[in-house]
Length: 326
Ligand SMILES: Nc1nc2c(ncn2[C@@H]2O[C@H](COP(=O)(O)OP(=O)(O)OP(=O)(O)O)[C@@H](O)[C@H]2O)c(=O)[nH]1
Ligand SMILES: [Mg+2]
Image (cartoon, rainbow, N blue to C red):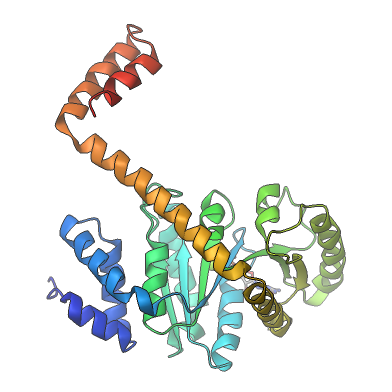
């Protein structure tokens, strides 16, 4: 059964009041690929824009099993105890994985899911992750307009999704484990370089000592990286999401970061830069889709494809001949 479509005004008012059901409906609208929905979503985003941008945006990544869900459950609960309203958005690189993972997260984040000051939403990343089809940024704006002042964007640290998340958050936190080599953890050097903090999870029981040792090692490793533009020196912390220890230290670190980058201007500059790249990405994406929708392009494309396959036309020449239509 299809529910009655909400008008833009109903959506705007509901979101401004912090109505979660309306927020969920708006998120579905923003994620929709139907042309009429996309049109309404754009009006909605434009209307709500003045009410956005006031949250702190935290990105969290780490390989499967590192404890992201457990950490977010525990840390998120701490945030709400501090009076913050938290929205958790998850990006999953492969849709196949996401089914299991989202179900798993529902059970693992049980406490948070019941918390009236928390909102959990798996974000559809679409088939072309890294491209624009994912709407996490827009969903983030909707959550901000609904009054959420802390946003966590979670992603699995195995692919390109962390670059995407890094480009939409204020602080990028990498969860790691002690005792497993970096290669084993599948973390690429590039991801370490993006991190504003490495937090070694599962620092409990027999793992406490190795975690402390790993902390020193990571601290040394991070020093070898070029200085961050924010003037912030990446930190290494240990915690146990299970025993809920070390979480207050993580909170204090984020607070310190926030004060630093707000006073030195980096916070605003970074957000402006992120907006600019988002605009450019959207532009490229829209250009591509609208170009390939043209019937005459489709036809010329098929022709040239065959010519390239049969070796009749060089690839570059063929591409230029398709482009020459515009
Ligand atoms: N000892 C210990 N175990 C933990 C800790 N945090 C998480 N775990 C356990 O590690 C396992 C994986 O934790 P999850 O929170 O599901 O990990 P995840 O990173 O969300 O995993 P994916 O969703 O598969 O990417 C679970 O069995 C947790 O109970 C911790 O601090 N200490
Ligand atoms: Mg998880």
